[in-house]
Image 1 (cartoon, rainbow, N blue to C red):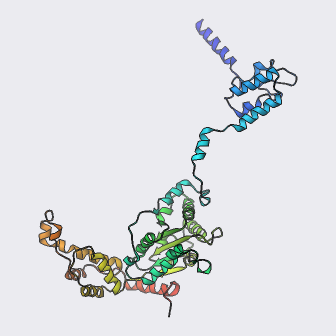
Image 2: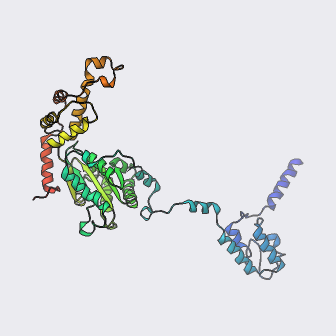
Image 3: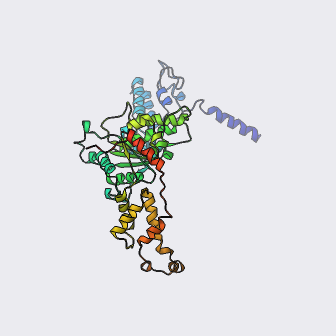
Length: 413
């Protein structure tokens, strides 16, 4: 008997529930109130509000209840009640959404329709802290340094002078043998220019997902334009802008096309302060369209005798040594064909010679810094047979030939 009573009461409770309940504040319920011939409230023309009060929705807000009471009393017309409910619906503002919009920063026009995750990836490539490097720290390369200052530094100092035909080019390619200081020049540009410096590698642009590489390149140019003046330095740019061929993968072709279109396409602006600097050891593999856009092609040669002497001076100026000017010049003459990296390796190995003495090595834990002897010229001569030049003569002939065909050379007097 108890089970039958419980089942009967539960069934009766279920029968009392509304067939189509609506949540509080639902737009559907609000718009349905006082609608003529509405099935929700059963209001028809000619019927009074008291007859339809039992058929009103089960849940109402305080404002809606007040409107219903006014209609029942006859002090408010049904049309006015409908307009009041509609006004309440339109004027409602979500406080949580309003606070979020107030805290949002204004979006730069260049960053519209760009994925925020890609923007964060590109912003992580911005160089913000670098050791100060002066142009005097770069040994030799006087023509290349003057040309870079003319393109990257002076237009930022006097933009009123570099306009029109004097507008600097938007692209520079630094080519030459490995270890000649191309990347070091990029670090010097980042230190000397008062601009946003992006150090981009091809691995930061590639992605395993189809289409993500092109989106990353578009995001890179968008962030650079939003942070003008900007300098984008791409090391080993030949791996990104290699000559197009039939056997090339479709994804790399699309990335190359997107880069060239963003670099200098229909949607670019002529007066934007954006500079692309690429470094490569294989300039002959650059695409023709990329070679045309990178209009300033600077050959970073092997250091001459005076530059090699300056490299020795810069390397040992913080070490204890007893080399004279004549001895340094003699070492510079004996290292013909050495690159900047080879000269640094020679100086490093020569500086290790005082540490290789038997007395020092046997008492390395107890020896004082002042007890280590000075670096001598004999240490350099001894390591000349150990550190050899790494650049082949065939490669130098190839660079000379490409520079003669496409390079930006010194002016003839």
